Amino acid sequence: MAYTVGAVARLAGVTVRTLHHYDEIGLLSPGGRSQAGYRRYGVADLERLQRILFYRELGFGLDQIKTMMTDGQADAVVHLRRQHQLLRDRIGRLERMAAAVQKAMEAQTMGISLTPDERFEVFGDHDPEADAAEAAELWGTNDPYAQARRRAASYSKADWLRHKAESQAVNDRLAAAMRSGLPPTSAEAMDAAEAHRLTISRWFYDCPIQMHVGLGEMYVADPRCAATYEQVAAGLAQYVRDAIVVNAARAR
Image 1 (cartoon, rainbow, N blue to C red):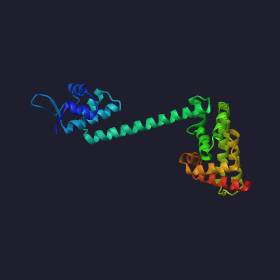
Image 2 (image 1 turned 135 degrees about the vertical axis):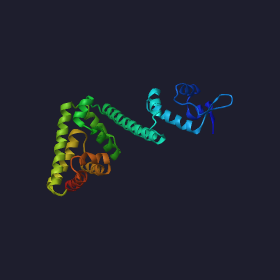
Image 3 (image 1 turned 120 degrees about the horizontal axis):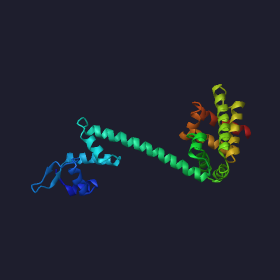
């Protein structure tokens, strides 16, 4: 099949002038001509145009594309594999950018007045705002989120570092109990679970026993939450959840 330059422009979403320019620079020359001398593009030409447009979308200049397209060792599959990897790399970068922007928005909403460097120093990959937001979603109320927002707005870098140290100490207690073979029903595990609850109440929002149980369930159901504890010790998320549950039963 042969396509006119106008038909190809409509199919590809480019202008006729663009196709003329590609022909002039030797990037995409039509495979044939009509008896009147008009350009006629075949299926192979359309496939080449598709690869060119992919590279353009990926940000390559026409000279770079021409060099890649004239690589005698690169067939259509090679180009597609290369473009697929480039697209995956771009998607990864965009996802990281989107996550960074989201954290910045949440920090503004929460009133956390730290520079990006300070946030990374204090939190690393952890997102402290999400804990309060998830508690609000879990319990159908904005009270935990509102409390956390008010408190976070007043915290300095030193306050956040103290919170980090306190939270890490509680997690270390739980991990030590688990590694020692103590069951979640042990006094050591339950006491550490209670310290976990009190840390939340002291730094972010009032966390009564039943809310704490709900958070414990979230720690195993939400992969992101589970990862926070699994990074400390494998199996810790489930252990924390179980210790929270039996601590709640002890309190009742």
